[in-house]
Amino acid sequence: ITLSSASPSAGAFVRQPALSKLTHRTALHVAAPVANINEGVDVDVRLNTYPEIPANLVDCFSPKEWEQRCALAVSYRIAYLHDWHENIFNHITLKVEGSDAEPDGPHFLLNDFGLGFDEITACNLLKVNLDGMLAEQPNPVPLDRRNINAGKGRVFKPGYVLHSAIHASRDDVHAIWHGHDLDATAVSQTKFGVLPLSQEATYALNKGVSYHPFEGSANDLSEQPRLVKNLGPTNQIMILEDHGPIVACPTIEEAFAGMYFLTRACKFQVKSLSVAGGDLSKIHMPDDELLDEMVRRMKKFDEAPSSAEVKSTLDSSNGEKNGEEVAHDTPGLMFAYARRSAERKFGPDSIYR
Image (cartoon, rainbow, N blue to C red):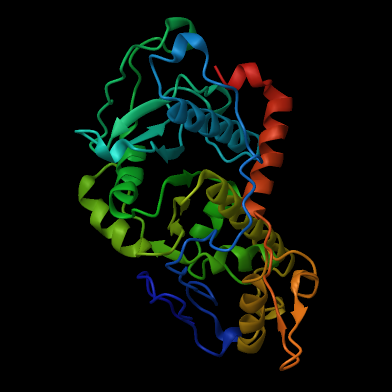
């Protein structure tokens, strides 16, 4: 089957029926819906909480920015534990809430170039504008809280080029997660891309997957319009060919879940193709009917068990059940476990400082 790099219209399938003759891209390409991904989800805001802002930082950050810094710092530690990093490269960014109102806004937070993911803290994250320039802080951060690089910080241009393009063009995107996971990057080097071979792949594909051709190191501003066009207006995942995956979501929790399932799907795919000697005819490739069923079930992936029956009441007039369905905040729950793991590994005082 053949897929173009451009995003299909929302909710559309782009595929040919003869899956056994697959030659390019992926067998399933679903554009993400325009509606908020958490619409109808019973989100527990207590899933992920962080220490209150220290007294010597209240003049440096707002309480909300401090919370975002904590969430992003622990995200880098989570990425380190999942091996979604490459020495001092790769980036996770988070848009600073309320920064659109700033004269040079919006702003987003990212890692200081030269630090490893396991060295990122709430205070050594940089705040930059869409031009990649460091944003002014109300007051300088105490030097003891920037113990590795006490200078102003370094912005790595390829990270700025990729992330600022998406932050500038997609109002729904607040968190962007990019890494060079070995298996996901290997899949980015294939012409067929991500295949619908697992539940994990279905989750990723259901978020909308786009592809962007490799143009070399992402340090040329002229590439930004093509990046934006290929990601499209709603898709949350883009495979940078011969480079690696990028996940763009409304929240850092959703970005983590997207990257988790995508990289897991790629690991399964690489292993299954290895076992099959690269012969796709020896792989259990779903047909069109099964693909439709996989997508239908994935739409209820977060649904609580038997919620329809538990919440329903019998309408005596017509015998139909009416009620509400309850959905879990799966990305929030996944992130909470990953956060707790990172806190146990590194210690909260090492991260939220």
